[in-house]
Structure formats: structure tokens, C-alpha cells
Length: 159
Image 1 (tube, helix red, strand yellow):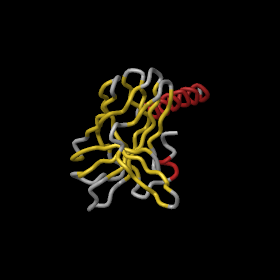
Image 2: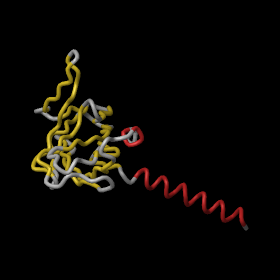
Image 3: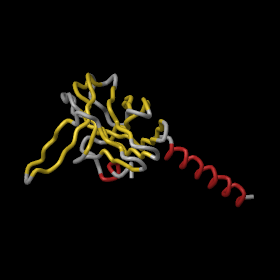
């Protein structure tokens, strides 16, 4: 009897764990968006970053725009080193998604910039946004807000 209950508990726990792990992924056409996340913001901050993994199982596409009711505008940026200087620039044409590839938006590289944020992001909340792909079209996503300083576990969340 106890073995039967333990078996049921293990099966239920595995099902719930799988459901939770899969619940923070979004899909449009052949594009899958994995685990969008952001960091909590200081109360006076007006910009916030967003990170996610985009897996394109189909033909080449492009992430062309994004919007959120929490920001006046949403842009795509790239950070990279130019010698000893870190530079950040807006990607005017969006982010290219080659056919059958994965592109990761993460701190220190490509990322989403929420500009003129109306209410700073707080740890534990979800920030709704819409991503628009050139071919696949729009998809609603939610960015899970983690600690203000970010941590290794949260940064690795999408991997």
C-alpha cells in the first residue's frame, strides 16, 4: 500500500515538475521562446532589460519589434566589447534568426530594452509583452522578474 502511494506521489511530482518547466515557454509558428526573464529595477529606474532564448526550427526569420504596457517603448540592443570599452547600441533592423538555429538574448549580448518604464519591475512578478516576428507574426509572452542583481541560477534559467 505504501509503495503504491509513493509511486503515485513520484508520478504526480514528475508531472507537476514537467508542467512547471514547460509553462514558461511560448511558441508562434516554428519559433519557440524559452523562459523570458528580467531583473527587478530600482524604484527610480526608467529602463529595464529582458532576456530569453529563441529557437527557430523553420526558415530564417527576424524579431522585428516588441511592445509592453509597462514601457513607453521596447527596443532590441546589443552589448559588445570594443577593445577595453563596453558598447551598447540599438539594433535598428531587429534580430536575425537564421534557419534552424537558436539565438540567446542574455546579459552582455543581445537583449530587450524596456524604455520609459511606467512602473519598475518587482521581483516575483511577471511582465507581459508582445514579440513580433517578420514571418511568424506576433506572440504574447511574460518575463519572470528575478532579483535586482541577478544571480547565476536565474541567469542560467533559460539554458
